[in-house]
Length: 125
Length: 314
Image 1 (cartoon, each protein chain N blue to C red):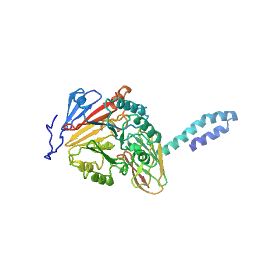
Image 2 (tube, each protein chain N blue to C red):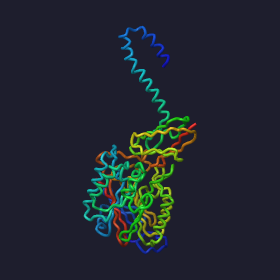
Image 3 (cartoon, each protein chain N blue to C red):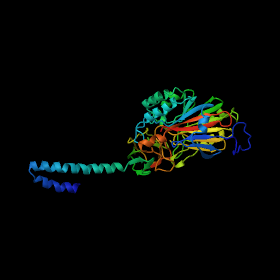
Image 4 (spheres, helix red, strand yellow):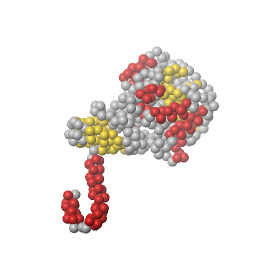
């Protein structure tokens, strides 16, 4: 990103004000898209999805202070309940999400309170 | 269909020893289950003959009011169709047993809509909650306020009618990670006390949402401590276990116990292991109603105490 911008700046400096606006209009969405991709990738790393009554990834390792988000993609509501009661979501209907910030290290075994055969684990280091 | 071919385990039980269960499935084929061996007996036949006698009750299940996904965008509409079938019955059942998942998300409006449509039957309803009925903020308070009068704990109770002892149990509360449905020690202690003074010849009907027996562990279709409840029931000459949850008919006869799960009135679920998950099964619109329905149970005093007639909405 830095390299790309450093190449652009001298080029835009030589442009007339009118041309600079055109270039900015063309580059704007591109830069925006690159930034968006970056944030999606960072977010996905801490997202657990629920599809077909399964937590994916079933085991996730995160740093202390990380917020993990669960998203339900099923047509059936699910919940996320920590075995040791550290967290418990409300029922998540289709596309609903639940987030929890892990403030301390440890292993958190969790399950769906409605379908307890669904299990997952968050390891906080 | 008298007492042939059935082992009474040398107990010399005074009442009937054969349970006959007849299913009129979507295909219109009538099945008789005798001593655990199902065989087809053709259309209607004995089921029709058994219909006018004795005392009847109806099992309805898994209405999932509020469900609006592709598998059935109108769960209230299909419940209305089921209720219309009840209203059209020539002889009204004595009552209805609803084996849970009245609503999809435990919302007040969902309960309201369910109550309104079920109310049109004009028949008393005995409820037990499904896991979808206890996902309100207070985890079951909404259900108990509406249906829990006179019940214990999370909503369990018993009553007697026509000499049959009915027991409504709750196996959807306080579920353990990695486990199945759950009764818990308090409810099992209550069940033991409830059965204590009942003679072995009292016919027992037990109903709960999740199957008591393990139908398919991988999908959580069973009750962790279900066998402990069945242990308490095994001395009785006639035990019928009615469940919902799996949105399809499964029937099994084991000794003096008959297990029956009901169809949903909302959406079907796949047969165990036949799909990646137990989620709603998407069918062509013209086939949906062959997989939804209700079960009528006839209690015949004599040698055919309980007969099931399952009716689809098709």
